Image (cartoon, rainbow over all chains, first blue to last red; front, side):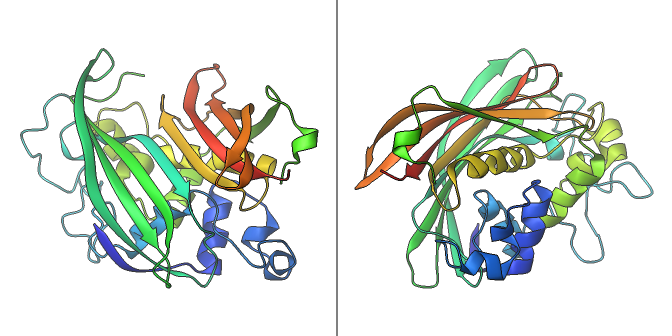
Length: 167
Length: 139
């Protein structure tokens, strides 16, 4: 994944902060934020995740027209079973998020324009009672600001499960 | 920002993150984050196709809610590191409570920082998110 332009906008920060139950005015009140040490609206710590909005090919967003989307419409899923998914889970949606790590190098503020590039990290396998064979894979994303400075390093670990996780 | 002379190793900060998590809250996170995986928002897909008992929250929603507790404790722009493991799924109706515990106070790149252990549990005291964070403090 590569994202050329991840515009960090105040209204998006406001919506994101709301969605994670954060009422801190530093995320929505410019006047208040300007008077803090941060001197402006800043991004909450997990905001970089919303870079997905700026990835033109992001596969977990329905394409305009909805074609090929695997969520329900007339049928319970809009995509044909892949056949190799196995178990009750059926392939495509079985990728789960196992871990997420952020390192913060520089502040991210409303008005910044970030770019992001992702490279694969380690991968490994494990057996589990709750979901069968687990395949883990790591990806490392570097976010840089408009000055080319590294602002956030994000490491995600995804897991493909053999079947739906027993709760 | 936390002040070094006001904190000790072992100090904790606890906050209730959400009570009776609503499906709409999950939808709200999908919209803000851009992760529209139907497993989180589409009950028909989640139950009939993916084989889950219902939709469930994005791991990143739990991490984000936990992050709110964390920044309310350590202050704005103070985090240098925040990482978690998603240890159990979060379902509609769950009530989540999160605790940060100070595990260390040390120097890092010319700043004083605290290391924190973070855990978020559901109403059955099952951990859903466990992790660590580091934040700058005032010496």
